[in-house]
Image (cartoon, rainbow, N blue to C red):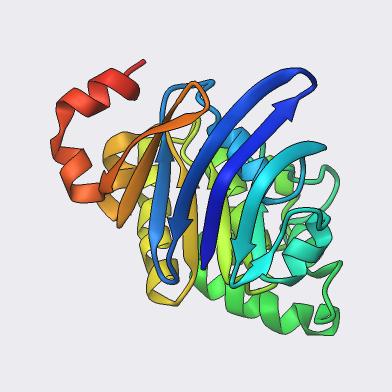
Length: 234
């Protein structure tokens, strides 16, 4: 579904992502791993078309994405949940969910879509009329994911979803990711919680200083403490 070849990305003069290649097949959960500053978030932002300067090939379902703006990538079925969640202050949970369809031709279906999404996110179902910023950190993360799911994306890019979340909600969140996969959503995950991420992933790529330094099946990487200590330990 996603094929990345020789991808490079820059912030001003900083060459952050350096000639990386990887792929994600339909129906997979694939994790990008590595220490802070390895280039993981920059990779996701580049895939979504949010960086001004990048090079290389990004093919999504056979279509080249390089040079296409973020809203075109969204309409092709690519969704992105950033690390900072971007919950809109002053809006309810329901209104934040409605934003997930603001650029979609399916805006008229928002009520039906919210009812459907609420069944997948029972914590949100109970809080649809609540001010979204009054939710806990974990609930806000679920809201950000639910908002991205409103347009029924074919693939979702998740950036550090467990960051700052209490353990109980982290468990619920990773159960949710497995359920989304079972429902047909492909996931590219950036996550520091190595055990949780590899526990639900099919494969993983490890980044270090902007380059892919190791790749393998999730189960094999989970059992390889040497690789984890070398590239993922704080």
